[in-house]
Image 1: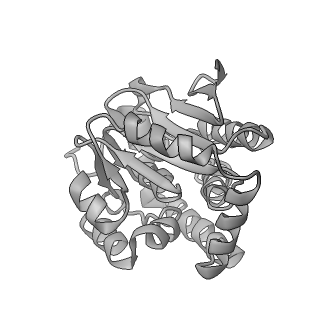
Image 2: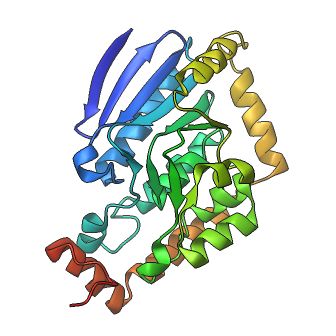
Amino acid sequence: MGMTNISADLIVEYGAAWHRAQLSRPDRRNVLTPQLIDALGRAITDCENDLAARAFVIESSGSVFCDGMDLAAAAQNSQVRGAGGEAFVHLLDRFTTADVAVICVVDGRATGGGVGLAAACDFVFATPRSSFCLPEALWGLVPCLVAPFLIRRAGYRLCQQMALSTIPIDVDSAKAAGLVDTVEDQPQRSMQLLLNRLRRTQPGSIGAAKRYFRTLWPLDDRTLQNAIDSLEGFLIDPGMVNRLQQFADNQQLPWQPT
């Protein structure tokens, strides 16, 4: 068993047949910076290149699992491609076809892109204190990059309700909808049972199964490109640019009085 820091935002631990990536910036609520997205991409590549590996586990430190897009980065670069959005949607897409099972452990709040991280995974474990929220409409945005993966995992109606209402759902509602598989105070035991089972699978079988199932519910290039283009259209709106800049400069949220 070993451990390494791929970046300041991510710590990766290596075990028997699994790699575990921990989002490690609780002081920043584990937001999805371009650097973190890149680090996750490199970490799953390392996992797939490990012939003994069968699972890639994503966890977090602190009370927030992931607060989504780095708004300060978006204020500096409204281009989705420059701010990491394109890399993020392709990372989520990669989870759905990877040669290893991708497992997410949510302990705390998952917001925006944090919901996307969970939705794109093959298995999602969560603790009772977890919640899930799509607050983009409060900013004048749409969860374009998250929606294809959330709909694929938990259905159109849940995605629409979360996006339109912006009201967080608790972990029991997320489980009932299929976004979460298991809810436990200590999900490590159930996850270990799964990891032990995955170790028995034949090399290549996990990836082959995932790519076959992908053909039954496809996410094609056109869908993903539409997600990127649509979000970029929202981000270049002058009002949106101003809201993001106000947040980056003064931590002022759009619904707060000036």
